[in-house]
Each structure stands twice: as structure tokens, then as C-alpha cells.
Length: 151
Image 1 (cartoon, rainbow, N blue to C red):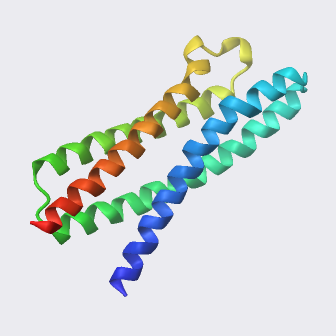
Image 2: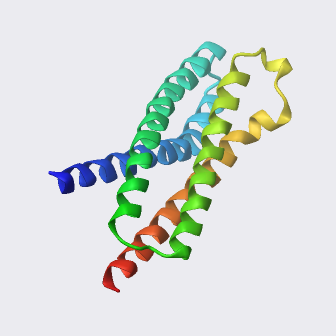
């Protein structure tokens, strides 16, 4: 039963991260340029942004819940060593930075466009970069954990 829960949590964690990061790639590389080329109305752009923000909010909730579970699950299973802990701390910091940037972006989106700072336009790229970093760090953690199990 506990193994099934761990597998479910890992799967949900991975899917939520993939949806958020993959969605960010599609949003930046396809949707935004498509809206600009098609001269979409500001209402259409705002509706798409609001829908994407809802998906991101769900992903953030899933990532937080499953992430906390996975931290305790992994750290209570085997002695993982200092390298694992260091990578985990960096991954947590990157994930929290992503969440903070997403919250900042959502807050700024409520303000009139003329009052948004230049940084607001760069935030999606920062979120994507941090998301890619968290995936890399997650893969590194899996490798470190597997190595610890073999010892």
C-alpha cells in the first residue's frame, strides 16, 4: 500500500511539473507568437492567460503536496548522503522561486498594462528556465538515490 502511494505521488509530481514546464514552452513558443500574428483581441489574450494561470495554480498545489511527501519518503528510506541533500536544497529553492515568480506574474497581470514593469515580461522565461533546472535536478536526485540504494 505504501509503495502504491509513493508511486502515485511520484507520478503526480512528475505530471504536474511536466504540464507546467511543457505548458510554459507551448505558451512562449506557440501561443504568444500566434496571438500576435493573428492580431488577437486583448480579451482573447487575457482569457488564455487566465486559463493557463488556473492550470499553473493546480500544478503548484500538486507540486507542493507531492513534493513534501516525496521529501519525507526519500529521506526516511535510506541514508542518501550530503550530495543528495545539497541537490535537494537547490531543487527546492528553484521550485520556490518558480512559485514566487508565478505569484508575482499573476499579481502584476491584475494591474493595467501601462503600470507593469519590464521584469513582468521576462518572468515567463525565468519560470521556464527554473522549471528546466528543476527537471535536471530531479533527474540528478533519482540517480543519487539509486546510487545510495546500491550501497
